[in-house]
Length: 382
Figure 1 (cartoon, rainbow, N blue to C red):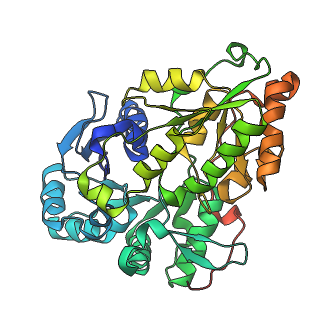
Figure 2: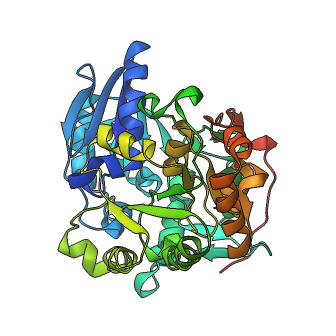
């Protein structure tokens, strides 16, 4: 079988911070092991030499990645590679991929990965547009492009029951029939980021927490910063905050300067260290190994998190707000609704060795299953 894996790397200077590239780097060797002829189309090749590489430019902005798929380039790529299956890492590009397949005269099937949902749902079931994709009111257009992508796919893959429920509800709202083509496929774990529980000593009364998420405002970074002030003042906790992006392009900073602003604000706080993996996976592992616990993002309606999975693979307990996939995935003892609760959990991790040992072990990922078994919500228009 010939498979074309289309990536949309948003930050080619920091591949380690791009979940889509990490997934391709983990999945394509397994596909090659199974005898699949794989070609990855992206700004950078996957690590396995058996995997073919078709160079493609990185989209300069998050809107170009979704609204300017480059149909001419896609059609030419399809004619060169003649795939039987196409994996669309950016779900909104699926209609253009379908058109490119039509022009090239091939009936390849399209599997769309819903890595990022441009919406979430409130507790009352209202559909809420993602603010990071709503500049100049573009959020609803992105939502419509997402729905069009769902319609164009033969298979739609999401990473959690929460994401499946939300995607189904959004599709229903847009009159897109998903039927049996929606499947929950948990994110692949990087085996380089897995530790033996025997190698994880409990803290000696003081802990280091790690926050290894993007510092965008829509990830709830202001809310995290407020918690940091409480943790460092009221609990035996120091914080290590990862700078995953480094220096971003002027175009991306102009669209959203919040990561730089939040990084500078956090760097000025007592008890906080800003750390960078410099794009090196080994250094990233060592930084995680130097911490005692992780903190999940405060992104409203989080449908999954690669950074949380990384921490759990390293045996770090992850404390999390009770929302979205986090409430589905994190042990109830580590979930909180208020800052007071978060401070108490962090202090207990520092001082209660048995509590720490119970939670300091690699967490099993969700078992794959179809969305038909997931709880559903019914969304109302934003």
